[in-house]
Length: 196
Image (cartoon, rainbow, N blue to C red):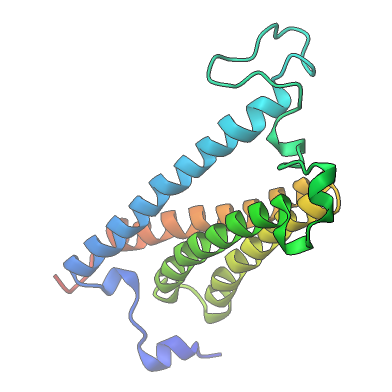
């Protein structure tokens, strides 16, 4: 069966001219540094306070200096912000939980979608089959939606929905890493481009 890309002579990353390869590389590496920053924030803000706290680990007498002392478990299991009985009489859309969740999910949705719009543009030019590239474009967006859903479900139904962050974030993280390394390989380490 003939690949439709072969019929159209679709350009691939390795055929990009040098300035285009430099631009794509700079964009991908900059986004990779941002993703590493997000991973660091998750570890420091969520994982360490949740799993390395005096309440959960008797060997740890005091939380690390950078972490505030709290009578709660870490952020992964919290249901913040807490609402007082007075605020329960407010309309749903004025509750602290609703405002907080709306604020963070819309920022997260725009930011993550922008990353995967740019990475999707890179995927379009990977030297792979059409169906594989289509999945590599679609799956990170599915991961983002799962991640966003977990914030709403955690805030309004049960903190246990936190665990949806794992498949959601894992899905877009794995595909991001794959596209990053595959794209860099095709541009700089595979057969040299005939266009310079």
